[in-house]
Length: 544
Length: 89
Image (cartoon, rainbow over all chains, first blue to last red; front, side):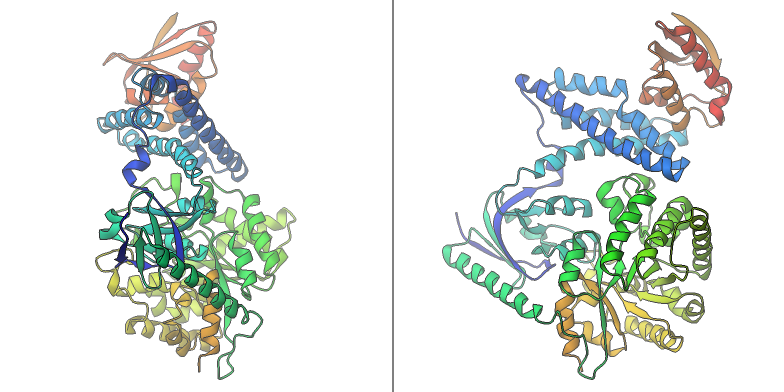
């Protein structure tokens, strides 16, 4: 096999090296696993179908269980419809027939039957009925996704996954397999949710490989070098030796950074910069502790939906928040659900928006779904009995959104009082600064909330009108553009005058190349990816 | 086998939620239950949500309900009740 060195134009997500065998999956393969089966495989295939239904039923029952607790009748109705579709005897009969008689694989049979259903729905005139096709699509996906999860278990040697694109949920699923050592993605962008998760897992990953995608053949050995931004296909012994050496050097560097863990994060002029951790999911807690984070500056909570695909109950959320608060007693900032944009909400997000970045996301979603919002706020309040918890609201763009949220928070407090449950009566509430309107009204906001957190990803996107996920113009997306820095300057002048703590928590806070510019502005609180804590600390210590 | 005719009184027609209620109610009986939209001769298995939705019953449509089995009387009555009280909506 010929040795090929590919200089990729793609963007590296994490600095590192990996050696593994390529496992490739294209989107179409994902669905068309195997088209047909042989006669002696019928019973096995029918069994697989039964199992997929049983598993999906279990998931739905779990959701219904949670719903009984929240008494959310609207979603209850949707989920009951899903259950009826999943167990529809006519659909089942037809799919079984396709497997038994036409010798289709389960996936082909499901796709065929649901394709027919979709066709039927396009001919229905009643608009209420017409849009229910989404419910069928959801059920179809939950049946076929089951299969996908199974296929991941087959990975048994060091593997570099080569994919067109990946969802946050898939990243987590794949990560559970320790043999997955790296990723190459054809599409995707460095600030998408999946990328953020890949980053914090510290798996060497290159995204936007585009033109090189074809060259990466199934089963070939490959070296990923995200520092040189190269891929070496079918490496020779020399390459492998070199790479192993680099992996060793990388380890040594990590060891050296570890010496900083106990050091205070003071700049050369003696200013204390608080470095906290961004946490997306449970596995990161240990990494954050190990790297000496002085708290959690941003606890993202969307993972509840990404990972479980069911509605999380108050108790389930409370247990999760409590676990983190108990580890970081002095400071945990919990951001309420930030759905929308590239973070869709599985089965609840039925409507496709024309312009999701300007659509129903963050606090807008929560205020439209007060049951979900209140359940979360109650869970956060309950966790506040165990340590210092702050509540952070995403995507605030108007004063009345903050006011309404505070009202809901008060009613949640009343509810806990009635239930005799302990919580911190002085729990602080703050907002994300990620919409330009907040910059213009910063003085009014500063009088109505306790703290601020700057989300540079969205703020930059909205100030510059550049879609951060768009491959054509993404290169002009720059969080250090003078316009963004000027906006932050306005914000910091006011928040410092009003003595409202303001932290920087966007991707940029984890960027060791650019962080100096933000420290120059007077930022003294950072919240960074767990894997970047020490490199950022090194930067802070060397800052004038 | 017994059957009786009824009318869809629901303004928005038999959409997702009523369809789900039909299925949920039908599942309580061992009898086979069929709904037939008389206008088109479309016959739906009342235990199949896809069938019931695909029937796309509109307000004013005449529906023939047929039940076959041990508990066909109770089943027919339960179905008629659903249509008569407009699916509790």
